[in-house]
Every structure is written in C-alpha cells, then in structure tokens.
Length: 269
Image (cartoon, rainbow, N blue to C red; front, side, top):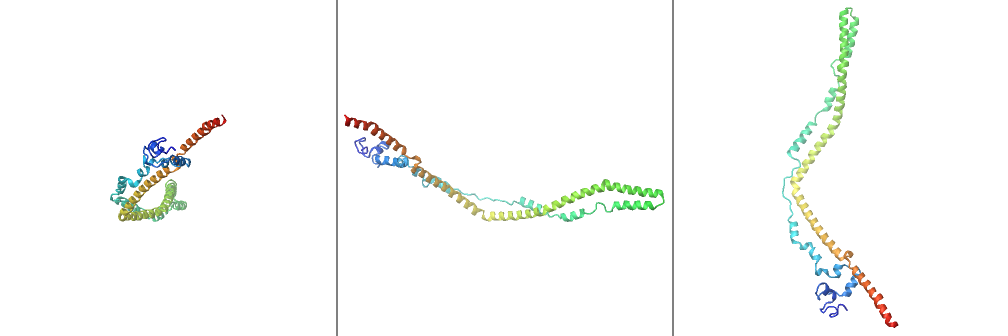
C-alpha cells in the first residue's frame, strides 16, 4: 500500500525510493525491504546504497589507473654490488697466510731442555771430583761451583722450565684452533668468490624478478582489500536487521496494544 502512488507519495516508485533518493525509477518495494531486513541481509544491498556511493566501483583496483601506473613504474637501478671487496679479499688472504705457520715444529723445539747442559749432573760431578782431590783449596772451589750451579737451577732454570711448559701448553691449544680456523677462512673466501660471481652475472635477473614479485604483492593486497570490502558490505556485518526489529515491535504495539483493544471495544459494546 505504501508503494502505491498517492498514498504517501504522489510520485511513482513507492515509499523507499522517493524517501531515500527522491527517485521513483528505482525498484525498491517496501515489502521487499522489510523481508530482506527480516532475513538479516546487508543494509547496503537492501537499501540500494550504491545509488549514493558505489563502494565496489570506488574500491575496484582496476579503476585506479594512476596507482596501477605507479606500481608498474617501480624498477631497480643498476648498481655495482661488491660483497667481496678488494680490501676484504686481501685481508682474508693475509689471514690465511698468517695461519699457515708451522706451530708443530716450534712446539717440538721448545720441548727440549732449557739449558744445553744438565747442570744437576754437572754439579754432582763437581762434588764427586772435589771429594777425590787432596788439595783443599781446589776442592773448596769445586764445591762452590757445584753450589752455584744448583742455585742457578733453583733460581732460573726451574722458573724457565715452568714458563716453557705453559708456553708449550698454549702453543698446543693454539695449534688445535689454527687448523679449523684456516679451513674456515679458506671456505669463506671460496664462498664469497662464488657469491660475488653470482651477483656479477645474475643480480639483474634477481632484482627484476623481486621487483615483479613486489608489484604482484601490491596488486594482490589491493584485490584482497576490494574483496574484503565487498564481502563486508554484502555480509551481515552491516545488517539492516534493526529495521525489521523496529518494524516488528511497532507492528506488535499497534496491533496488540491499540488496534485489538479498539476492535474488542466495538464488538463488546
């Protein structure tokens, strides 16, 4: 009844098109609107809000020609990328050569005695000879030499022996680390050469492929955004169900609390 001309609006087209858009040419029967709201449908679709603002067209990435053109213009400039620089190459080579020292030979050389002669045996021989000499002055002199030899052993030789042992221990530990480190330096140098060769010959292809993938991701994000908005406006997230609830509550109010008592009054009077 509300959609018939002359009841509420003189213009054709019904209540909703004239009320919302002042345009009777839009097909939007009030009964269909109420039914759609009852079914919890989208307000955007039910009320034909695209006649005011067409979200699908406005958010369609295919319509954003300027943005599409900017994405297509994304490119990478040519550049000379050096991973293995001449300085780094020289430093690695120097380190490799420095690690080539023969620590084993040095450790073996240090493993010998500190003094060329065995001073303890020398002191014992002096004491033995002094005990066999009848000349007291010579015997005393030999004993003095033996005593001085032992003092040299206790004050210098023993300390040098301890330092020698510590040095040999550290050389052994260093020797165990030098070999693996030298191999690692050699491998690093070889890998860096391979990487540099790959960059020199393939960087352009890789860069352009990455740019292409990046542009594709941007376009994909735009398409996802458009699909998300379309789903949001068509889904129940912006439902017109409250319109149905208001209509239903008003109908109950009018029918049960106003019309029914009036009808009952006339029938009973």
